[in-house]
Image (tube, rainbow, N blue to C red; front, side, top):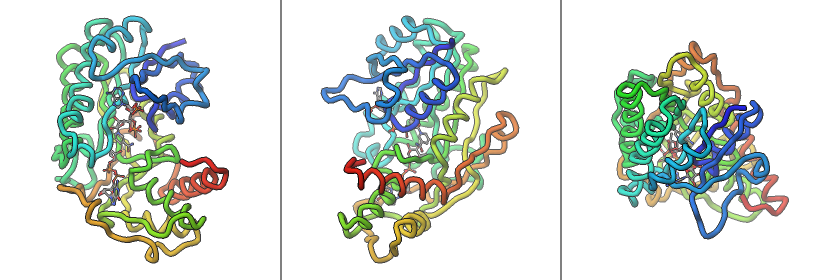
Length: 323
Ligand code: NAP
Ligand code: F7E
């Protein structure tokens, strides 16, 4: 039974990856940071099947201890400060978690067992003000937020440890991926949740920022499969994971409100508070390499994804579970 350590197991991707690895017979060890109130909502249904251990990307010795004690074959580094607007409010902390946290984990692996296979959660935010359309593994980075800058560091330190120490270290450059478990501040869930609440008469309007921005949105359940596949190859490498389609925030509103039986234009209000100091206007990935080398393909369409999220929000709200 192989052992995998997942940092960020309480997050959206951590919960789906844990489910996938359990279904493949792994022993799953999830690293969680100490908080005064426990927030295991996304992993409650599998809590008895996994092992949780305290650790923090800010604390080197906790990472060394975990790698030493659990002797994993694979480490998936999903933990990060992942909300882009917060990265302007807390740029130093974002750098500590999202950038230097990667080096701390790589150092723990290098010191304890350089044979461990390592996955780094890199991001399409690294492409930022894109210099090529669609974006692929060879596209130069031009990040537009402290978060994007931190992810560029995380990407290159992963490549550097691979080249310097011959580690099996992979960087997955994942485009936006969503699900009913997505944090409520991200635009897809903010929109689907509001559409369901407006339909149920619990809210009247939805305040948003830039409706013209375009994203390549996929389903998180599909994307964690690509993470696992990257660590099963003969050689470590970096891969773009995306659908190859792009949609505006406006289209997202159309699909979500239509599913709720509403006209989005009657409810959406532009609020400058949600505009960003520097925007990423257009993202669309080329998943050709992941398709050819990993045999990976997305299964859920954009419309299917947004409708799944609206339906899940309806169900949760109607049954009295706040999302
Ligand atoms: P998420 O829902 O925001 O989850 C982030 C996780 O990181 C949470 O479990 C959080 O724990 C943990 N964490 C934060 N700071 C930590 C620290 N100092 N030490 C230990 N754990 C810490 O993010 P996600 O959407 O699942 O994304 C997973 C990863 O992929 C992130 O690195 C993100 O930047 C990256 N990514 C995401 C996307 C996307 O579209 N979702 C695309 C590309 C890349 P708490 O529960 O304690 O807060
Ligand atoms: O914004 C626009 C906003 O916050 C998407 C993270 O997982 O994916 C995510 O980063 C777009 C932006 O995601 C609102 O300006 C308009 O253009 O859902 P988001 P993100 O910034 O793309 C990448 C790949 C990651 O790696 C990150 O970790 O939507 N937008 N109005 C809005 N966005 C938000 N959040 N709220 C609004 O009201």
